[in-house]
Structures are given as structure tokens and as C-alpha cells.
Image 1 (tube, rainbow, N blue to C red):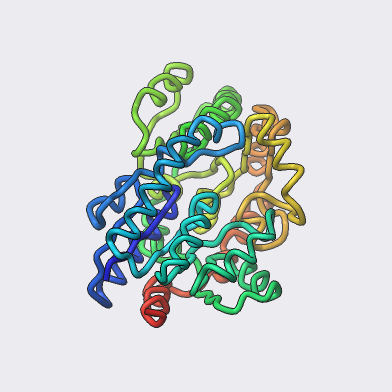
Image 2: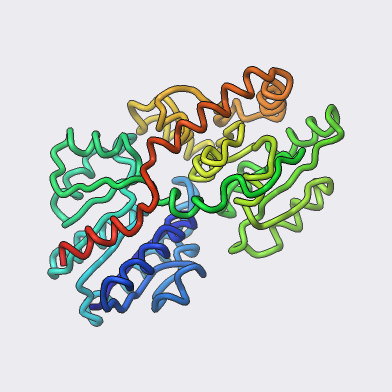
Amino acid sequence: MNALIITGERSAENYASLLVDELNRKGNFNFFSICSNILENKTEKIADYRDISIIGAKEAIGIIKKALRTLSKTKKTIKEQKIELVILLDFPEFNLKIAKFSKKIGAKVVYYITPQIWAWRQYRIKQLIKYTDLVIPILPFERMFFNAKGLKNIKYFGHPLIDLLHNRIGTHKKEKIILLMPGSRKSEIEFNYKPIFEAAKLIKEKYEDFEFVWVYPKHLNSSLRDRIKGEFEFVRVENDSYEFMDKAYFGILKSGTTTLEAALFGLPMVVVYKLSKLSYNIGRMIIKNINYISLPNLIMDKKIVEELIEDRATPSNIFEAFDKIHTDKSERKRVIEQLKNIQTVLGEYPITPKIAEEIVKIL
């Protein structure tokens, strides 16, 4: 069976890789993909999402032509290769268009890792109802949201991070390391590295015994890394985020999947998020009914870790968030204990084989 799997960022591609492996154990699939380098050896790659996946309204303007070309090429592939199964992971601006096209020509459409409809653009629920055969969310509150909105073809099994991390947690001794992760996309890093690294400098000035590790995304070229490293020579660059989430004492992390990964490692953290002013102001207008932006706080529906957004994401505020946890042992213990609770609500290992089995049932 010819199948297409589309991802739009690194975390989703990791989950897609697990799913491709499981589906190949259950049947004879020939996969095409939009991916980066994780899936390219397991599938026939038709485009790279790094060319069209960015954060923010202002930043999107520059890639419209590329996105339209990729959309056209993807539709052509679906028709010419007679794709029978389309698996879409997040990336809604692109993937919902592909869902509509695929459904019209008779392919089975699975939406795995659903758009954040609970936060904004709730009208998209109608598109999921109309253009999908199976919807698989990965956050526990999403299941309840979709059920309440009348989505019938929904199955929830848990978060695939459980599969990725089940044999990585607790394999290293804790060290006096502060983990710095300003983002996985170039645009994210550009917006977030200054306050994060300036905060690291403040911590270093007061606490000389800490080491500062920046996990630089493997898929980005070295020019950005080298330029920033030139400004902050005391920062050590590594590339295995899970190793240093396990080793680190504290994390200063950009909001996103990284914060949930760190939570599963029990890493106390402060969550930072900056965008262009235009993107931030648009976001404030359209995002509704959510009290938090970081996944640990969202999932538990309470403040576990400090969130510093836009104008509050200053070096001094980041330093204070660290200093509070470092100097107050009871606060540090509270955070670690509450982070441990998150794993219990994300499902029981293994998750991905159950998802693959459900997909096979609709074929």
C-alpha cells in the first residue's frame, strides 16, 4: 500500500518514525513523506518541511511561494502514486489542505497529533470531522475537548514521548549543569537566545560552579551556532538533549515539546517564549480560553513551572526564577514531585503499537 506521512517539525518527525516502524511490522507499506533527515532513510522524501515550517505571522510571509509549490507537489504525488493512506502530524496550515484533497480522492486520512484547536481556530473542528477517518490526539485533555465538540472518530492512547524516553530517564547522575534550549528552529533561536543566554551570564556571575550547556539542533547548520557562541563563549555546545535533560540541575527552555520532555526527566525549569511583536499581538487576539502556554502546566492545569512570555522574558526575571528554586529546597522538591505526576497521565508504555493497530483497522 502506498502511504504518505507529513510532519512539520522535529518532535512530530520522531513520533512519525516510530509509527512508520510499527506499521511496517504490521503490513506492506511504501511510504512517501515530507520530513527532514529522520524519516528520509525510511521513506521516499518528496519535500523538506524545514523550507516551509516557521513560527509567527510576520515570518510566514517569506515562505508563501515555497509552501504553495510544496502543496502542489504533494497533491501531485498523492494522485500519481495512488496514495491510499495519508497520515498527518500537526502542521495544520498545510495538513488540513492535504486532508481535504486526500479525502476527496478517496484516500484514508489519519490526523495524528491534532492542531491546537482548543486554544484557537475552533472552527477547524468541522474540517477534522469532514476530512478525516481517524483522529489521534496525544494530550489527555484533548480527548475530552474533541468528545465535547462532537468528533466521533477519535482514539486516544497516550503520548508517544513515553516510547521515546522509556529507556533514557535516570541513566545519568545529576551534575551542576544548567541546560539552555532557545528553540529548534532558526527563527525561534533568534528570538529567544538573547534573554536566555544573558540570564545564564547572570547566574554564572553569582554561582561560578555551574556549567552551561546549549543543546544545538542537529538539523541546523553551524553558522548560527558559531555566531551566537562567539557572543557567549562560556556556553558549551552539545547535541543530545535527552542526555542533558537527564544530567542537568535546571533548564531554561523555550516553550514547546522540549518542556514536556524535560518534565518527564523531572527537570526543574523556567519556560521562556518570545516572538516578533506582530506575531505576539496577533496571538494574543486569537488565542482563547487557556491559562498557560507550557505543556507541563497545561496538562496538569496548574502552575508547576514559571512561564515568562514576551516582555516578561528578561534576563533578570529568568535569573530570579532560577534563584528561587536554587535557594529554596522545598520549592525545588515541590517542582520535581509535581513533574513526576505528569508521566502518570500520559499513558502506559508502549503507545505507538496501539496507534498503528488502530490505523490498520481502518484500511
